[in-house]
Length: 419
Image (cartoon, rainbow, N blue to C red; front, side, top):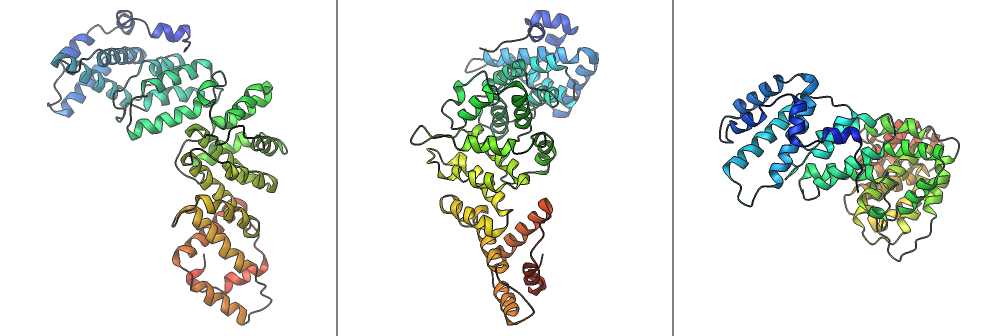
C-alpha cells in the first residue's frame, strides 16, 4: 500500500478544492468549447498555449495537477462507446497536458510527486509519458531516494501496466530498476536470482548501504552491452568512493552465493543490475573479480533472454583484457551465448586472432614477419574491424603498453590493416 505524504495529499485534493487553489475557474468552459480533433492542430495548440500563459506561473503546476486528475477521471469513467462530450473533454485535457510540458514547468518535490501519482495514460506512446517521471527524478539526483519517491514511482508504474508501446516499455524498465532499490518490498523480486543481493543490502550498516545506494542510483537502463559516455560520467564518482578491494570483495561474495533452486530466474531489472555491476569491473582490472564473474555463465538459468545482455557485457569486459588472459573466458562464454555475426563472436575472434599474433616472437625483420603480414592480410574484413576495435578500446580506457613483439608485428602489417 503506497503511503502519500501530507504535502502530496494536499495537492491531490478533490477537484473542486484544486480548482479553487489553481485560481482559474474557467477550465470547464475551456474544455467545453475546445475544438474537435478534425480542426487545425496549430490553432488548437495556440489556444492551449494562451490558456497556460493566462495563468500565473506560480500556479501553473497546481493547474496541471488538476488537468491530470480530470483526464484520469475522464478516461477511467468512459464507456466502451464514449459520448462526443467525453471524447472532446479527454482530447482537450490531453493536449493541455502536452502543451504545459512543452513550457518546461519546474515543480518542486511535492508537486513532482503529486504529478507522478496523478498522471494516467491509455496508450503510453505520446510525448506526455516520460515528463512526469523526469520531473520527480530531477529532485533525487544528488540525494537518496525517499519512501515517498518510491511510492510515487510505484503508482506511476501501476498506471502504465496495461501499456505496450515502446516508449512505455522503456520507461517501465527505468522505473523497475529504481524500484529494485526499494528494500522495503522484497516480494516483487523474491523469485529473482538477485534477491540475495537486495537482502544483503537491506542488512548492511547505514554507511555501507549509503555507498551502494549511491552506486546503484547511477546505474542505467539501456540496451547497449558497452558502457556509454553518460554511464562513465555518472558512475565513476560513486564507484571511486569504495576503498581498497571493497567493491570486488562484496561482488565476489554475492557471486559465490549457492543456488537454492535447480533453474533460477533472472528478472529484467535484475539483469540490468548485473550488467551495470559488470561494467563497474572494467576500470578495476581485478583478475580475481574477472574470474569470479564466470560464475554467471555457469548458472543454469530458467530464462536465458535476460542473461543475454549480461553475457554481452561480460564479453566486452574480457575483450579489454590482454588476449592471453581473456581468451579462456571469451571461449567459455561464446559456447552458450555467441551467434554468427554477433558481438560476442566478434570479441572472441578478435582476442583469438590477436593472441596468435602477439604470441609470435619478432626479433628482427625476417620471413616470419612477412608471413605474418600475408596471413593477417588474408583475414576477413569483419575480423580486422573487431581486432582494431578491441585494441582501440583498450588504449582508450587503460592506455595499455603493448609488448615490443606485438608492436613489431603491427608495424609489419600492411597499411590497410593498421589502426
